[in-house]
Image 1 (spheres, rainbow, N blue to C red):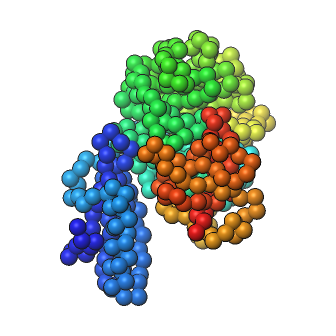
Image 2 (image 1 turned 90 degrees about the vertical axis):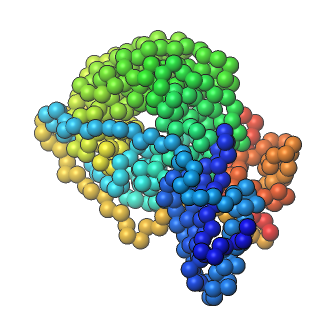
Image 3 (image 1 turned 135 degrees about the vertical axis):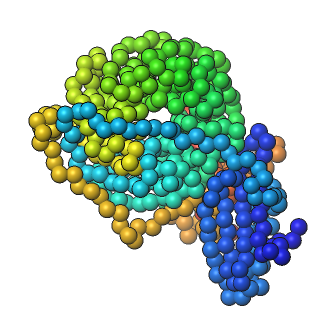
Length: 483
């Protein structure tokens, strides 16, 4: 094929039956301007535009881009000829709250699109929405950074130091360094509902009620189909993977060795949470139920007044929180006694997390809401006294970091930050693996490394490596290629 057709546009697709790839790449030349559009088949994707000194240089740059993609397996295609990846967006309704009082909201950040993803740690609050935006804020609501991902964010999950965003394009992006990169690529036939990652192992629940498990090398390990469809819950630990669907919760052995237990819940599961010894299932029949991780026994039931979209706990499950379809948020004690019910003031909570007497919600109107959940603040709210909500504004100059498709090159290790580690990409049994070559590490262990930038024989400098329980290293920080 010619690098750029007479129409000045080349459209390519990579879609593997039964595989993870289901994406397009389009290059257009208009005089000295080259426009590249790429993303999930069926979606608008992302667009990048570059201007060159001459038309000839623009065409040469376009030819180089197309050639690189063809060598990776892309082929010419007719746009619209292949079905897009199946994507189900949760269909939710949000009625006004019937609570007599409104929660004591300290601050609110409007992301601009319905949001499901949330993670709160010691330093940051993370929120991801259906527009593909992920923002990090501090605990007082100041916006610190923005990531622009190619498709809607299903959920945000943490695994030790690492933060991941699962997106509708079938990729799971590592957000732990300045530039995000795709760490996992999920099969195109999987209509993703929810994700969890434990010790580098990705667990995916989907519309069909399947559970798919992918290892740290982004390679399929095992799959099971549970008794129910619409699996909106997956949580994992060392003992099991807990899969929630419209027929209840099923626990599987982490190695795929079979089912440990299955428990019917009161209604289909719409959300899941876990503590050390229990999992919590929020259901469409207006309850949260606590299940023993060891046996699946239902230990407590927390009754709400509408379908439960989200739930969370304080450490150890001392308090249990729930958000319902009627824009209310609840707090229960461990045994199921309702302590309070308040309106969110910002729609229904689609996900939530508690930390240090604050309850963080992401809602149907796309807001990240910080609620003061201290006893004093809640008591005042029940009497009608709440603080004035502070609306957080997005700084106009805040840059948006897009996923990395290439890495910065350095000539020597000395040009990288002090303490950097050198790794090498090698061929092993027909697969590209990455091993550490710096001293002080086990050179037989693989390094979890983004597939998109692996080049046979290439060496890279990474900021730091951390050992994982499965006998591999995980990268933390930026990646640079040695040239």
